[in-house]
Image (cartoon, rainbow, N blue to C red):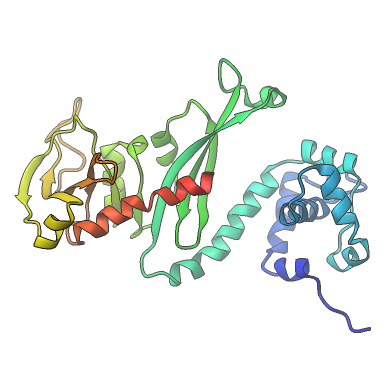
Length: 301
């Protein structure tokens, strides 16, 4: 009978197994292991995710139902207790670094497929149960973590992530994130730091975010609105501005350059002060970039 590769086999073709083996050796993932290799653990978890399993028992049962085909993948179906022990005891660093390696493989092709790379930045809180208190007792009243994500809306996938204690600020995590030169970064008020905005601009990046209500700006140029913009009533103001000339404790402002300030009315009637270092694009295009930030909110849900 003619042999046919399984769907799982096809899905695993892009997997950098050489990198995975080096990570297993680096973290000692298979040290002292007799029954369930790190590769078998990985494929068990991948199959559980793809099959929509809701428990370890269901994950193990569905994976074991393909026992005759697992030989070609070089893995074996685990027992529930064995997989539970592996998930508890094996170093998570193997899978964290494997995820980063996969992102790097996918990312160049995704960048070439788009004329402009847009990156959405945001975070979400992750409540943890008491079972995590021995390693994640980040809060005084329980365990909690925060997931920080840089998201590519074109590819609908994160390109960078980090996990910190829940009390850590968003901007603190952002300052440790790698910056892709020439990309457009869109973020909310949690990343309100003029020095970091200046760092993005120094890398040739465009940023789009909001100004706080109390932030005063000096108007350099009042850009006239077209008849279409006035009729639509969405863009209320389009200005070239400068931020305050000096911050407390410094001799000069880190972002002493012309910026774009656009006032946009939402459907709810609320008016946003959008700011960007993009001085050439239409006001509507900049406003649409900020609106695109909702895609990362949907990703978290």
